[in-house]
Image (cartoon, rainbow, N blue to C red; front, side, top):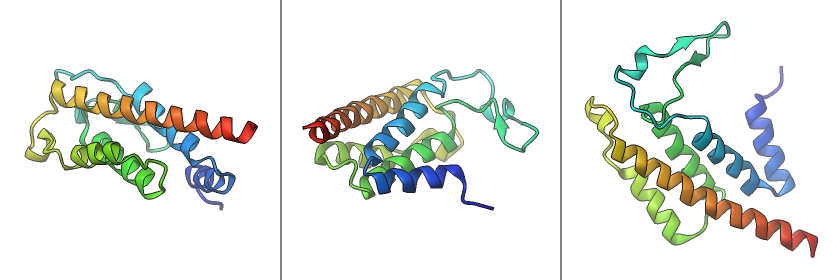
Length: 140
């Protein structure tokens, strides 16, 4: 049995020198495949398991697991030196230190979703510029 596909993709991107593109895809996925909505009921009640045992119906940015995952991906991108802008790094550090409502058993607020979207937009714009520059440098 081989390594999970996500790990294979990561090491292939690292080997090929395209980690910025790899992370850009991850952040775009987090932006485009998760909902900004704040459901009227607890999102944990909306999730069900599919035939493989994976959660379905839990694609909300307001979930604590999503927020923790976003923090982990931003940290990994910084550790891999894909994100090196000091202002952006500080913004991401503040995001990871934010006292989200779910820490206190409360629901995520619309202001927190807006902050998440600002983080995503800032990181995506940064990585798009970086990928464009890397591509331009390779074609020269």
